Image (cartoon, rainbow, N blue to C red):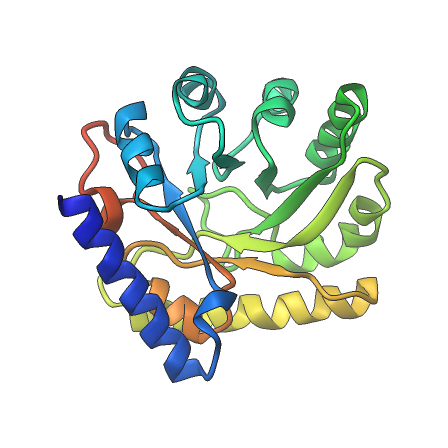
Length: 232
């Protein structure tokens, strides 16, 4: 099946990129992006050994997750609206796209009501693209300590969606900037942050070379989506 072949190729590329960077291949987690993919495709990916999946929209996840294997882990990787936080806290094991103090506060409040503590990643709009969500780096550094002090969330690192480019090398500076920003955040917090979520289907090898610990891959794994949407 094409899915099995695609998965093997992606794993080989992850291992090769890690080798170039002098890293262990196990230091990079593959997150399968399932936006627009039906439950049967998710379950097939699970049979091939994938356990971590990402959804961009709460409503799609709410309909899909109950139809998939109960052994899977799901993360929210799209923009999260405050009025969807209750559902997001119930559905996901991590929320990646936290882009404001207000959103972090709402997640913490909803997590408290659900009796849980939720890991988050802080989304960074590294170059200030008007079409994308995310913190500007300087504002993130201002609010980081306040977010980290919230009682029911744990800051586990950063994530970004870089500018689109036909050449992956063109976005290497963004990935370098993210690695450096993560290091600054670690200095402020006085503790290591385990995750740097960056790299998608067209640029994940470069992202790994620059320190990504998690790559979010949809198209290269499942093929083009039937539904239109942001490329992952």
